[in-house]
Length: 105
Image 1 (tube, rainbow, N blue to C red):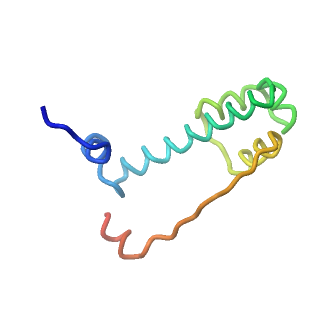
Image 2 (image 1 turned 90 degrees about the vertical axis):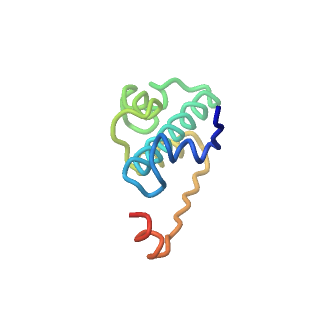
């Protein structure tokens, strides 16, 4: 039986880095990680979804959608949530070389 590294398996099953399929997969994975982080932070603060929703002015259902990565989410909402949870947020933006983007298409 042939063995694959995680990177090889992702390339084979999801698509090569830079492909639309891989980009979509990575985007959804990041949203899921944000949702999991929100849920863990909320529980650490001993808050219900309803209580957190009241803190930022949204309904419990929206907090549930955030935690379960279903529905659209804005950066503004994410920042409001983490602010209410008294959590520090860092964004990392990395610019690609123009040639890198052209080669991946």
